[in-house]
Image 1 (cartoon, rainbow, N blue to C red):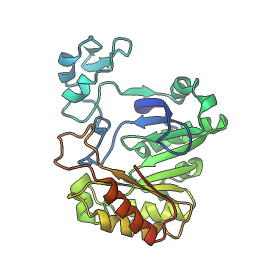
Image 2: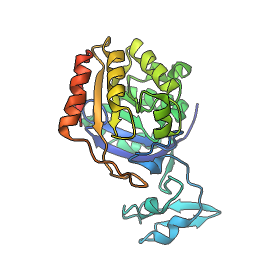
Image 3: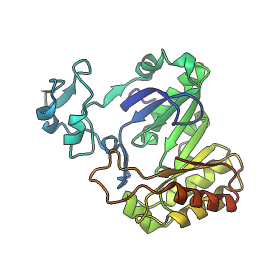
Image 4: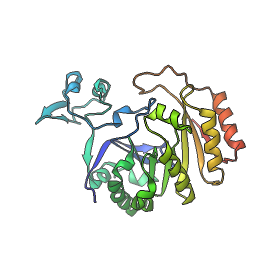
Length: 277
């Protein structure tokens, strides 16, 4: 059993991270480097270089024994440290036990349907998630996994057994374009798509629409064809937005009309439930 998880942040109440009202736990670390990542500070572990200390306006950061230490009581939440970091990390990451996480969301538990673990890529800490999910289930709540599919779920049977559902990103269908967007190929991602759908643990597939950077129409068409055989799986199409993206991308947010065109393509392929955001 893994005793600690590396947590970037916890949002006690979220209505966009799965069905109902949920607590969202964002874990640190990801092997993808998505060009349009909206939270790049979750990708890597802090190297304690100390650059962020100089830009903290409240003195919430200090250096002790070669490590950057974050004082949450002094932090004003300005995120100047995150903006200064060139390592795609954050000095505010916490090493937490399951009991620590439960304590942080305890006041929310009566009002939520469950938790969703995200990232970064949460499955990199799958052994810890198994322990966390067992304790969350004791509270009568559900456990969802928000994943980019970079790790093979067939090789994580305990996690698959304990999770209620997964929400899977398919960032691009074409392998080379997927590499352009993320730095990695999508072979395992597409294998996970099939596997999770077949065992009834795929809640939704999501694609961020980034015009000019991906084969968006081909991706939507191919994903839709793949999940059409599973009526309970919904397809979520997400507009690219520039929030948090570093360095900025010269890409316009897709129009509502174009998103509806893509949604209609997916309907034509047989997908029953499509969400555009």
